[in-house]
Image (tube, rainbow, N blue to C red):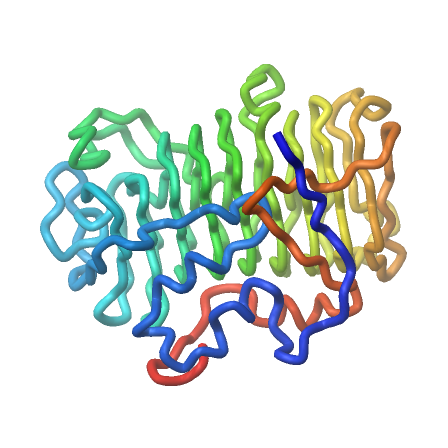
Length: 364
């Protein structure tokens, strides 16, 4: 297998967009060329096509029937066979009664509407490939009771167990891109990636008002997560976040060009020998002098875990405790790509993190 080491420093583009956004945001005809978005992912999730090449399905109703979803609803659209690009007819607040399972080759595209999923169950990406979730506001996701849910037209209705209350849970899935969403205040994680998931990018999201933000790896004993590869880029972490931005186990994580407001406990943590490259991020430490350290090793794997900081910008006394031996750089493969900007540009690169207010016939 050929590896491409494509992480490098460059000057900020004249567009003032990051490498993902400059691919599509300047086009005033984005509404008529929505699937262009699928060409714009960067990092390990670069190949995530979502519903590119499939039909466009317009959600017209905020109703939810987990076992027998009605046409026009988000759940009905998410269970369809084949490639589907889901858009919304108008602003919506959707309260899911049970978790929403997303079928392979699906894009949920909230551009052009204000779409909120809250005060109920939320999104589960399970045993699928090629998923894009873009432009949603997700908050107040709570634990859900067991119940019957239509997983997809192909897999049918199943009885699911109680869910933890994640905003977006990704398990046993590949080629997933989570971009430009606003996430806060849920019962468990905001984005969790577990059970052998790989080729994931989490980018341009706004995270705030939450405890355990992002878990990468199910448990210390789930060795399937050794193959996990996740890019965490251009996100704005804060205010009101405590920890797990992210917390990693076993796999490889490239944390790059993110902006961190002061954290409550730590910013980046891990167990069971993950490899973490923190590159050109901005870390603003909390005032509490006992919490200035960016990193926290959650077990005794300090000497064997390779954690590296490269050209990060540390403010208000923040510092990164490096560990392990050897240099680690992202092993991006053919078709995967990432352009790293200098840390001093990160406030500009992340200023539009979260769900965008896109207006038709104008650049987004």
